[in-house]
Length: 270
Image 1 (cartoon, rainbow, N blue to C red):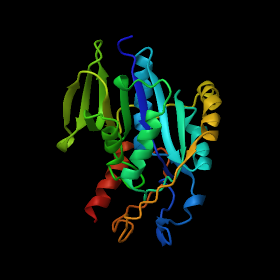
Image 2 (image 1 turned 90 degrees about the vertical axis):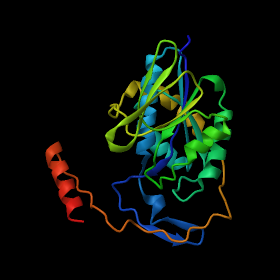
Image 3 (image 1 turned 60 degrees about the vertical axis):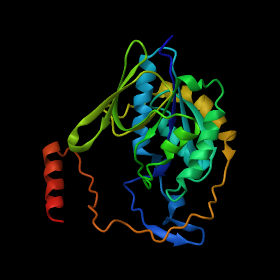
Image 4 (image 1 turned 90 degrees about the horizontal axis):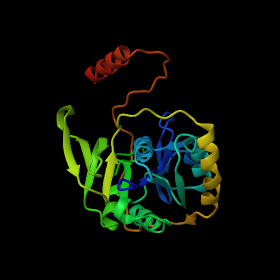
């Protein structure tokens, strides 16, 4: 099986973006107001990576897919109840902070250690994926650092499409300015893919996939290693919401033209 890849998707959990997210300063540094009470979702950017890697794994027989995620156990369990019904994967849980105010370098060290510890993972077949950006803070550095720590120098960011040839070569489309793509050909893994939004919709819930995933998600949560990220040198001078915000409205059955027109009008008025 020349195209049997080992996909590892790094995905954090974030507060539901539809909630009001208000930064506050506390004795331990900045956080979000009532953060522990906010419902969590899988980071939307990383979710695209998960869905696309699952599709590629399905197309290439013998491939495997792992999802590596760090966050409080209770939040991870809540999110996996939904994500676990979308696509088949093996779960690697890390019990730690999921805040957008954690240090990217510290987080990367923990993730790299967890990936090295995956039983059966072949580094020569590794396709490391995650979100190009994040809905929490968007440091844009964590995935790159994880790749560097694992010795992967072929890295692509803003990926929307990956086509795999019969010989295993990957044709990768990265976003560049003006709605254009930079297309590269990577002959073989290991490689890092920072996904943008891609081209696939969110898969529907599949109860059979959910039952299969939950058999190993709960044990993975029980044996999750606890970590603390305490970079004493990290200091946030100020944290505030963007000055210009467009309030989200939930409207059913709005056409694409209507949505686009409203956004354009809002941009012109600011």
